[in-house]
Image 1 (cartoon, rainbow over the protein chains, first blue to last red):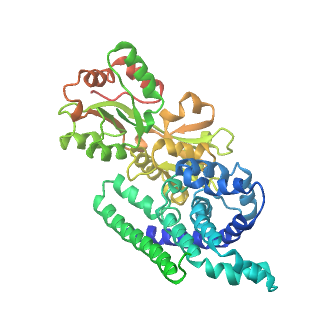
Image 2 (spheres, rainbow over the protein chains, first blue to last red):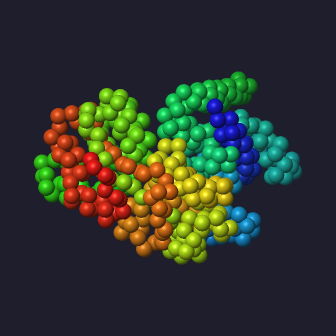
Image 3 (cartoon, one colour):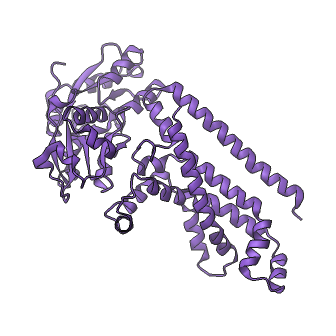
Amino acid sequence: MDWQAIALSLRLAVSTTAILLALGLPLAYWIVYSHRRWKFLVEAVVALPLVLPPTVLGFYILLAIGPRSPVGALYAKLTGGLLPFSFAGLLLASVLYSLPFTVQPMVAAFGAVDRRLIEASWCMGVSRAATFRRVIIPLARAGIATGAILSFAHTIGEFGVVLMVGGNIGGITRTVSISIYDQVQALNYTAAAHTSLLLLGFSFAVLAVVYALQRRVWAIWPVS
Amino acid sequence: MAAAADLQFALPQVLAQFRAANTGVEVSAVYGSSGNFYSQIRNGAPFDLFLSADMDYPRRLAAEGLAVPDSLFKYAVGRIVVWVPAASSIDVDGLGIRALESDAVRHVAIANPQHAPYGRAAEAALRSLGVYDRVAPKLVLGENIAQTLEFVQSGAADGGIVALSLVLAPTVKNQGRYWEVPLDAYPRIEQGGVILSRARGSAGAARLGAFLKNAPARRILRDYGFYAPEGR
């Protein structure tokens, strides 16, 4: 079994999830509570990776982070490195690819928080930031956890985007799904079967946790 | 038919000639990695003819009873080149493969040697020309030879070792410069095809197989940078 690829996928998934949590919480908050008329456009952009084929996304990302693009040129200027075929480039691609998986459960959870509780908190003089931290986040924690777990799992299973932008470098961009693909291509079916089985077990465990989380919440706070 | 990705540009020309001469036969081609097609065919993919980028996959299919016995034929010998974009400062004309050792080259794209015949050839050439140790840390692997070229075209990789047949295509020709790797620097990329079992008795498949061995097809393949195989 390709432990190097498994370790890399885990590292990528943990980093992606951490970034998405930091990015997703304010974004989801804005989507739920903003009154901007063009909000629907932002929602559409966030949901795009759900609809776009990973190959399209990967192709655009490769062009967008290459040394000839403004983003790639800026990155090269700042760090002296290149984004394509690097862990940082893969991380950027993963964050974009899993964005809806983090943001959408959070939006649903924030939207379900009783508006009266939030307004009561504001009336008692608690700031918006503190209300978000002490009222909304605790009440929406199941949705936040779901978003985090889904983006983690989605990154582990990411294939098309990695194939398009990764370049298949051992320990840097050869993730577990690419490693399985290589094993199948090299007719190494036994190794592919072992790694695949591991991923199957992992995916089932993740989904079981997601559904278990949702059940517990329903038991404590029944939907009225 | 299933065809290796290096045939992407040459084969449509061959097929156009074939269609003109055989109006009763319908043929369409899918391009991809030979190893991938091999797995798909073993699992029942509905192809009548398979043109691989090597001899090994078709030979295996014949041995496994998935191809029409004795239908194995060689149709071309592939050539590899070191390719850089036209605007690149890398001196591939003067330095040949040694140009890839330069510090200005940060990523070199080759096809995945695990399952792409062109990847195996590229790796062998790097080794036999004595630059492998310096180039190995820069290698990025394309899924097939066409994606390998795309890595360089997009600017993500600085140079690559790709099939001459792709580089000579009209759309690619003016985009870059190349240096051909000497044929004795890597094992010959003999490319073979087979008629698959489901096309047993099909006159169309037999005619196409024969057509690929004829002079007009050979001429087109030569124009696209393939050598003719020795013998049949």
